[in-house]
Image (tube, rainbow, N blue to C red; front, side, top):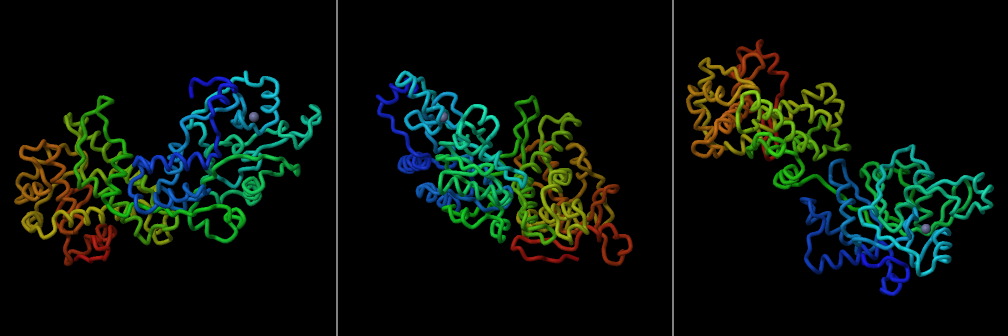
Length: 498
Ligand SMILES: [Zn+2]
């Protein structure tokens, strides 16, 4: 194809242009037949979203993805680019990427009439054929479709309905490609009418003048299901022209969630001269569990959802907090601890909307509750049925450990050496023999945080870990009582301690 430079050569080659939805379908058919992976990098949708997407594309539908934020909707739409031909021939300099074999605009038709088979052609790579727009209420028909300047048209002696008078908007510029509109319900009704007209009739009215615009575009949309179903947010005729509605969802298992976060989070920092990072599984699981807990928490607004970006950015901050500690202490290995998750509050509090009850508690406290509850959950999974009484007794007999998230690994190990049974418990998370100090310190931290989450011991900023404050000493546990009353267990049921 790259050898073809003129219209004449293109004609001789027997090249046939196809409507964009047919082109996408043909390429999908080939991929399915060859067993090629579809939508690489999209995890956990193999049995739900992807089959529906494939069916929509095979049907040559325009479609809409309905889902809450952070469900990979935009990523899926961008992935459609892989289904376009690697390049297509275009009339050079044409703003709407006209097909040299079937030009739409008057300028291109005139150019071809003059230059004939000698007219040079250009090849357009597929990345340029994907156009995306976030709908907001202030988007105008001029942004979306285009505008005309009646005075300029009159001066040039052109008819107003001649498309040469037109300044093209985003949609015509997506001609022969994919046009994605995110958050469709936020688009004003009259713009939706314009889109509908283009889909249906191939024309649109601008400033009252009808303009013919027989575009070839695959239209794809995203919306929040709540907004989409609300009456009047999307005009019925447009809704009617969207062939498929496909629902997305959050990862249904912790395994899928872990895989997504692992793929997306920036944790390999050795390239920039940083120390190697080793993230224990229980730290990853706690972070993931925070998102699962948040999605089920009644203090958090369900309609806006809790994005998968929460665990992704949290993991990045957790690694950074561990990196900061390792750099300060001169440790050669960065190993995050459960305690570091509390240092990642800035990536958690902004990722959810609170219900009234949550507002009363405050975003930071809600986030702390979520972390503690997540730690309890993961700890129960790892230490189910394991006897932790020896460690708890050590604290009950008056022991305390003034540790914090900045305490270096050697110090953690030294301070906890005399706590009977603690090291044995730490070994249960699967520490290799002769494990490096930062790994051991992290495992010890997990045990202490787990016992704290189960309220078997207490923790405060000034004293560190100490015995749980029992019922008779109730007046002194005012701060503790403010933390939370319940710990969730994996079944989803709530279990009350104390
Ligand atoms: Zn053109």
